[in-house]
Length: 241
Image (cartoon, rainbow, N blue to C red; front, side, top):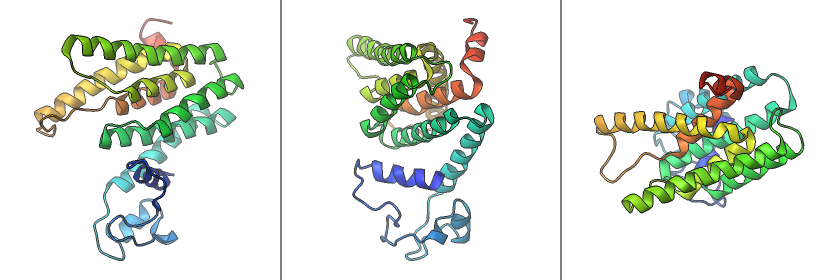
């Protein structure tokens, strides 16, 4: 799943699905099945394209391992039930969005909007235990409007844009899947972790002048954290249960 996810990222970066995904980006060599085995192929090929010798980024096996780990955690958390399959798809979409936003500072509508509508549909069909249709709809509204308000407050105060509209849509999508009560815990998690990572990158000199740390990866991480821990437990820890 991780290898397929990375190929989806490669196709979505220029927002085009016309370019074949399973090819070497340097020479166009078509990747054969035995060159596409997660992690193992990267090691067997000695981290290089078999045709042109171009180095293959270590990001591929890391994405594959990360995807497999998250899938295993979701499976352990939710157990064998139909909702587990839905959440595996959600986690894959969130990981893709996080990596795309980190690379490009763009959260494509091609992923955020289907994720949002799918969450509303799943809630309407009763496929999300604990999340009613009204709770899901309220989550969409709370997610979008909360960041929209922060965006305009920051812009009117500083004259700068602190985030993009894609962040609003991503949080709205998370609200559709997790309900309105998950919005504040997700934002708090994302804000704290984003600040820590941003400060660490600045101290390490990894944050170039004019570059900012995108918020989307941390929103996605907050959503996954709430899913894995469980919203009731998160609210209990925060004293809101």
